[in-house]
Image (cartoon, rainbow, N blue to C red; front, side):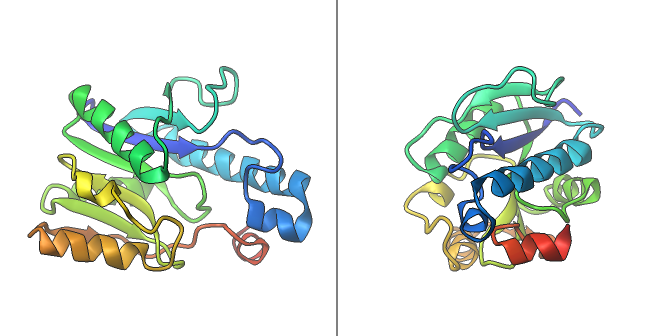
Length: 193
């Protein structure tokens, strides 16, 4: 399914830059271990999927880190919204007809969630995987909706509501996947690991 593109946003596992809320509880080294576990899970659920896969790194492209066989690129932009919009733009320019983006923060996301997301785009304009913290773990679309990425409350509990309201105001249809939990706090990790 060369026209179905999966974007995976990752951070480079550098102590002090990943899982900072977890680090406050268990320290930077343990937080990096947690993040590496999340990266491995994301690799496992995406490796054998039939989509065109692109990993977008926060800081630098790491050649030998387990993402072999994936396209590799750098996130470009001043905030998360701009970086995501640029990644979508690049993938649409590469002839994608459906694009789904995920991060690397969710231990309960499965291959089936990804398949559901691409299927949902047969009917809906946009698909969202809501996160329990008020954000989302997945976003998918068939054409770029720029306004979803501008002046949004990233990492805030009203991100999902703002996103849905914007889509409704623009007359766009939305499909919602099951709600999952991003691993942001040590308690989340203990619960799901």
